[in-house]
Amino acid sequence: MKKPFKFLIAALIALVVGSAIGYFTIDPMLNLITNMSGVQNGPWGTSLNVGSTSANPYLRAWVAEHGLLALAKSETIYLSAYVDDNGEPLLGNCDYRIEGKAPDTRWWSITAYGEDDFLIPNDQGRYSWSCTEIKLDPDGRFKIYLSKTPKEGNWLPTGDAKELSLSLRLYNPGPAYYDHESLKTVDLPHIIKEGCK
Amino acid sequence: MKKWIGWTVLAIFVMAIIVNLVMVIRIPNDIMDITLTQRFNYPSNQWVFAPPATHERRTIVRPSPDLLYSLCCYDISRYPLRLTAVIPDNYWSISGFAMNTDNFFAINDRQAKSTPIEVVLVPKGMTYEDSTGKAYVIVAPTDTGIILIRTVITSKDDLPRLTEIQKKATAELVGAPAEEEVAKPPVAGGLSFEAAEYVNSEYGFSIKYPADWAQGQPVGAQVFTAAASAKVPVITVSVREAATFTDSFKAGLEESGGSNISIGPEQQTKLADGTEAMIAKADWTVKAGYPGETFALGVQKGGKWVVAAVTTVALLVPYDEAKFSEIANTLQFK
Image 1 (spheres, rainbow over the protein chains, first blue to last red):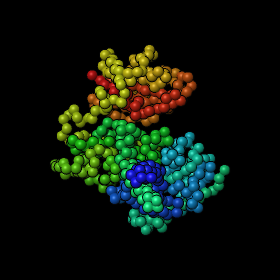
Image 2: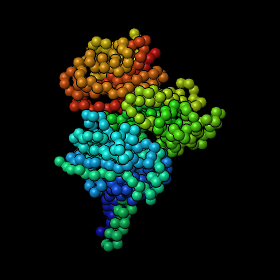
Image 3: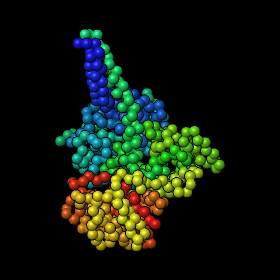
Image 4: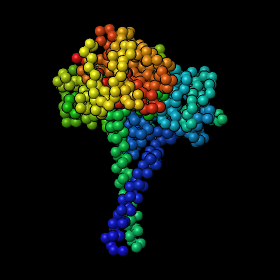
């Protein structure tokens, strides 16, 4: 085969295959790089670079896709959980108990989302529990029941969602939540699977 | 041969990196662009007061249902934008987002110098002298973007009071001629559809609608109706006495034989000429038993509500809030 023809074929292969690989690896790369630059504490994960002007292109892209218009850490910390305390995916056919002490923050809330990242339709119109309305135990701790079926207390209905995720929002949080290292060990709510149907 | 294979693999690798990086860099700007022009499609430099998020509102992913959002799509390419807002007595913040999604400023209720707070958004390279000394003068990294106010809803009972406070926010371009202070919505050539126009001389208004929609026979309080060939979407304009926009909107749906009517919260907006207007979305069951969705815009004139409503049955034609809003926003009064 002549040299120019070989070169043309090689360039064409590089163009097509390279473009395809580049395109189809966008989402895996976004997740990989976001996870690498993130902080994980039990089932809860976040990146302290969310909304910041120092965020890298991959983190910016991930935030644009999953948390558009998120505030920087100076104002709010957004923690997300897609798994329970055992690292297993949160599923709509399972019941979970979210329990812990109220975070050291001016205002906080825990919101449930479906697999499409939108609020889950339910007859109760209950999408979240916040510090202003949640019923606390006498010891100041709280329990939220994430379940399709009604529960006594702080019930967070999951409707017909198949896969679940949670957002813990901390507005004007205490200093322990700002720091990359201390955020790894600060006491955050536990997500405990109670059973599946 | 081996040499050729090695170079080809290297070229594939380099090409993959370039394509991946270029597309990733574009994602935030593309998403913001889509958000501004398609999802929101609100006029620039005006506040839009969104009701609390529910599962039916699917504009932004992972919304917080515990917050009231006020949103202003800014365009400061020609003039600085002065924003004011009354701060309630619980968590509140105002923040700005550039076209690459960067959160370039945030001020909360505890940091604010005064209430009402005053923020002046200035484009890069432009100077602004704050004569009052009270304003936060902020240089925006991009000429367009989004300003967002978050207000914590402490309880459902407190919602009416917080909504009232929310609606006291103002936005005005500094130094713009009066007619430019209110940005024009996309009318007269800027529409996404070829338009026909209905003019009502009795009540002094006009409205545009897709030219390929056929006019129908109005019933009851309707003064105009036109529909696409599939019968939906259909636009109706009605004029009736009612205490509120929602009452008038609901009466129109009932008049057409609708049932199970659920109307979302009203939002305040302005027409191109600055006329105050209200908008809302309804989910209901149309006379034939199918689920219907309607976007409506209403203006109160002389004790009556002029309501332009665009309805579809999603089974036939999907609900397109951007387009329905665009049609309803062509309502103009003389």
